[in-house]
Length: 181
Image (cartoon, rainbow, N blue to C red; front, side, top):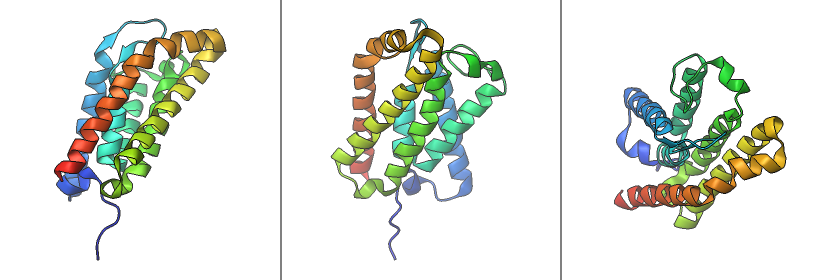
């Protein structure tokens, strides 16, 4: 009987050890991508969203677990977020983008369960939905600090073009991995 829940990861990782290694790789990619930033205020421009889109789409639920683990590790004090770490980060204006990444990675991973049965349009939609989730959560949280209009001006408008580029890159890489298999 053929397995209907196939992701790119399942093509390479059959054992639990392999899944742990891929999850650690996701955490490392998220940590490194948070440090590659352009310092806007109050929200820095990082590569984290690209990594979230890519690992959730390509690794499925392992990508989601990597995202959750990354946020937990940052909250317990590892300085892996763009501006450090620690539980106090929950009160940071940018924390909404982090919990948005968790929700987005779950949604993208859920839609990625049948990735090899998907066409390009479904990949595009799942990643765009993930991007919307990240920005809705981020702007909602940021607005409690600076108001809705300012949060849209500071947390959305400066990122539109770069985010579209990151989305296109994540879609392209995911699609190339699908076509390779």
